[in-house]
Image (tube, helix red, strand yellow):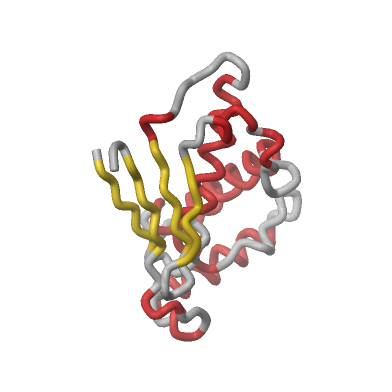
Length: 160
């Protein structure tokens, strides 16, 4: 398929919960606890109660397990997200031009229940109607699909 990206979130066996907690090292578990405690102290920052351990681990890994740096990065992300997507999601009515280009299709779930999407990057046509803001919203939607699997086993396969 020309210019196709297939997003397939790999979650070994499709099991979540205790089994996945084994994916965390002892050091990561400890750092996650420290990060949660640090975030609890900062009451004026955006709400982080809904942030799961996998997301916290992602931010910790991005900052080489430095709790202070990860907290700063996470807070900036949460502030950006609450400003960019105040309701928590983007409705299709907000990005009609992107949808009309027929460049992304959800293909259901694989045998383990993981979401699959097919994206035709070659069909992206930048237009003046929605501009950069609309393109960012579409990118946010793709990001949400990629992040649906909290196991940290996401996989993106591309063809050109």
